[in-house]
Image (cartoon, rainbow, N blue to C red; front, side, top):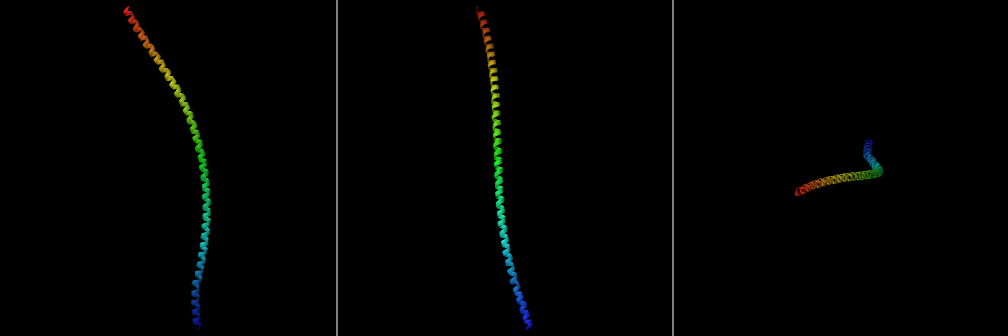
Length: 129
């Protein structure tokens, strides 16, 4: 009879062991779920902060870049205006010089033609006398 009790006791321990181990696995799963939840929340908070900081830095860099671009554009415009004024002055002077030369040449040509006509007229007058 003691043998029966011993066998029954062994079977009882064998049936309790899986139940106890199953309870332990359940607890482990609950702990793992809590840890995962906490890690997810921490990760989301960190990602949110990092995104916010990146947005601030990007905004600042964009602002600085826009200011630099505006200054460079202003400098370029001033240079272009200055160069255009210089070019207009030079073109005006060159045009004036060309006009003076043209007038001088026309005057010389007119004198030459007038002289030629005068000589021709004198010859004709002498021939008629």
